[in-house]
Image (cartoon, rainbow, N blue to C red):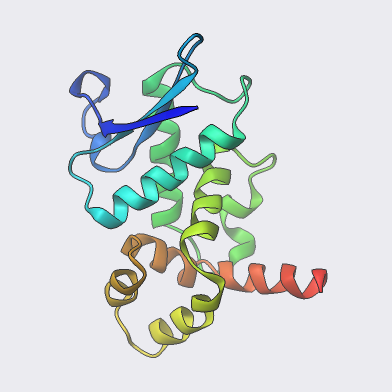
Length: 169
């Protein structure tokens, strides 16, 4: 496989989704390659997250979940961003955790979160934010978007993660 990461071309954008999302496009045979389109306005942390999330799409999506219409794909990604920004503290009310079956966008968002937030940093991250450290400072240290830190702490995701670990072990 060959994966190209490049700025999101203006022809794919509608109104302003390029400021809040990215996308991956599959190129058919004989290329069998993928293009990951990233907003040129993304900072380093958001580029890392976007590339990770889009790689998750490339690795997990099959033909039935791949979206060929870029506008619909952008709309799905924007819906996930809105769910993340408005995540309730009670994780059992969070649409990301109650989506059944879990949409490709939400699944890849959660996979990227798992990849980019090291397990050994999670307790410290929650403790730091709870004790008044700004989410921005934690995000800067981990090189991830501040939105990801806020979501992880506010949504109760770490409780779900710990519960799953305790049931496995």
